[in-house]
Image (cartoon, rainbow, N blue to C red):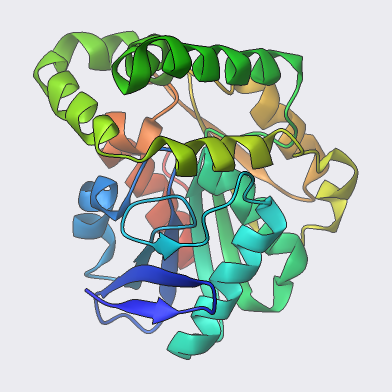
Length: 267
């Protein structure tokens, strides 16, 4: 799959499907395009699907810095869309991708159709700052393996940890392949995140999805987003944690597909 030159970086992307409308998926912090396999299967028959790796992620190359500002991540996506000739896209962002999606909605509203924000937040509060410090200290003390183990119970719900235990080593291997400097630079950018006063300016129709057991961005963060974004709808996915699209793809994808199509949401 190709890269596009965005000046200081070679930006990795994939396009799948033949739909008339495009849905762009934005990765969580330590995700890459491969993490959307379930969504690709469900969405590609109906939409053109754009997957991408942001600065610091996956196969995107270059732009090594200590901090990746969130507004620039959003501008990169707009630049990529222009290069690909995509005038308008729906966006599905999870966790870090949901944060970038908020900035994209505010900076490039003319390029945005409908917006799905999953397991994310409008501002980095004291708890998230403490988590940031804990993750950095874990990496400094024990590298990627310890960082992964510290994040494991915060990322996934109890059902996933029990029923998908065989996947944990696979996820750990994938985490070990991610370069820490890029991850840390993204995390540093999140420390500056606070869009509470600007949520009222989001004009896209918005669906919020949160895992019932999300310990990283609990329900109160989703409720804050719902209160701030005009007309936003909120759905809670039972029995899943912070990685709802990975933990229960059928439930999450059914909601997102209906929403992007303008249909009534499943009960």
